[in-house]
Amino acid sequence: MNEIAANVLKEDPRAIARLITFTENGDFEASNAMKDIHRFTGNAHVIGVTGVMGGGKSTLICEIAREFRKKGKKVGIIAIDPTSPFSGGALLGDRVRMMELAMDKGVFIRSMGTRGMLGGLASAVYDVVEILDASGKDIILIETVGVGQAEVDIIKIADTTLVVLVPGLGDSVQTIKAGLMEIADIFIINKADRPGVNQTVAEVESLVDIECSNEDRRTPVLKTIAKEVNGIKELVQEIETHKKYLKNCKKFDIKRKKRYEAELVEIIRKRLMNFIFDESKFKDKVELLIDQIYKKEIDPYSAADKILGKILK
Ligand SMILES: Nc1nc2c(ncn2[C@@H]2O[C@H](COP(=O)(O)OP(=O)(O)OP(=O)(O)O)[C@@H](O)[C@H]2O)c(=O)[nH]1
Ligand SMILES: [Mg+2]
Image 1 (spheres, protein in one colour):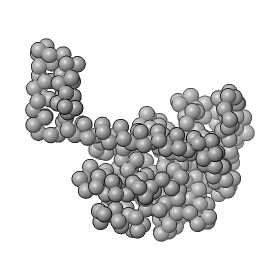
Image 2 (cartoon, helix red, strand yellow):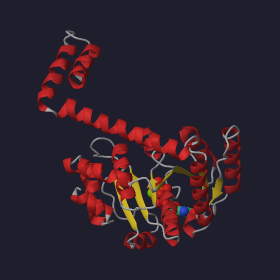
Image 3 (spheres, protein in one colour):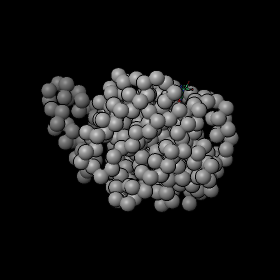
Image 4 (spheres, helix red, strand yellow):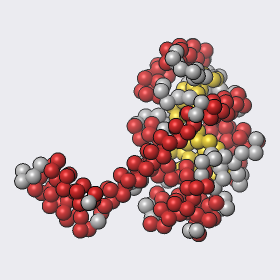
């Protein structure tokens, strides 16, 4: 077995960090290690946390992680920071609690930026989830801001998706309309210490009523005050109940297969792009075809047939 893979399976944090960096850089050794670890994956419960900016997602993740640690579960955290690839530092809300978590051997925290990521962020996140899963993490928490399609794609990796909203109706309704409604498995109205919380809960509940009227499960709407560690136990209980629900009705397997489908497509896409645009012999051919399209000597569809014909032969 590949040496890094073997060390990842032994839960060595340095090997985990190195393999993640290799996959992010598209390093050749990464794919060998990824091949070796796959059969040791599948145990982790992947939890996506998305929602409004500044809604308290990081604070919540920190508290959810602490609660799972109390139950003896090992936790991996992936923080997607859209603005900075090297933010490091204060990822998770409260610095003191985050430092405590970072020191805990049962926790691995990684931040990833959307800028400067070769081969797409979603595919990099798939890899990190596989690596953390193989390294024995029981729970993997992924934080994204629910804005672009890329972030929604990332959240689709999750078995359970938490959508974090805050009191104040305008924002919540807009966020739900922006496509988060269908991906939410649990709604959280965080900052429940703020005025207007009950009104927001009622509003989200009524949207859930419409959305879930034909379904066998009603999306719960929970109140939390993450900053004061209020409502976290109940939230973790709902997360565990959701996993049981998925297992009971076989939706767990369907979700996992969808995730592997997306991952497979991503790997093929990445390899094809590398092949077409990086391989030097092929690159000349592509440039020639682009020139011919420009001169109307060939149309783009026929040019694509030629390129694909070469690859699929
Ligand atoms: N009043 C109140 N403030 C909170 C609560 N939870 C978190 N905060 C505060 O809200 C601010 C944002 O919290 P974060 O956890 O960084 O929020 P986030 O959603 O991760 O923010 P981004 O990643 O920047 O989108 C911080 O100052 C927190 O201390 C809460 O329950 N009540
Ligand atoms: Mg955050």
